[in-house]
Image (cartoon, rainbow, N blue to C red; front, top):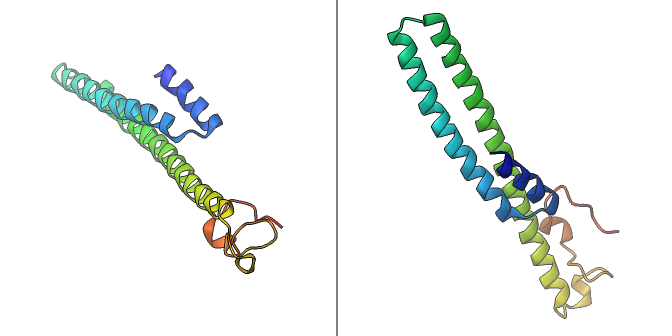
Amino acid sequence: MAMLSVMLLVAINMERRKLFLPWLLGVVVFIISDMAIDIWIAVIEAQLKHYPVMYGTILALIVSTLLNIYCILCVTSHYQELGDYEYYYNRIMNYSDRDIDRKLCNGYGVPANYDSLLPPYDVKIT
């Protein structure tokens, strides 16, 4: 898991979407295995009648699962944002590479509808 987390940090720094996928897959596998182990431990503790320990185990299971799901949602959201950014960036670069009528572009070779092509977090060229 540590190796996947380092890979995720590199992916975020380099803004490489495809490097997010191993971390996402690893965390899903980790959540499933963690839930299976925790349920197994809770069943054994219930058979031994260690109810306070069982309740603590179930609480830890719920908290860790919710935290991991939140992390998956955050990374998935960033993965999707990078995809949107790549799509709009490639679309703008394709416009600027073509010989477009200057009436449709400002002086930088960027389409006049530049605002509609970019996600809201990009800065408008002035």
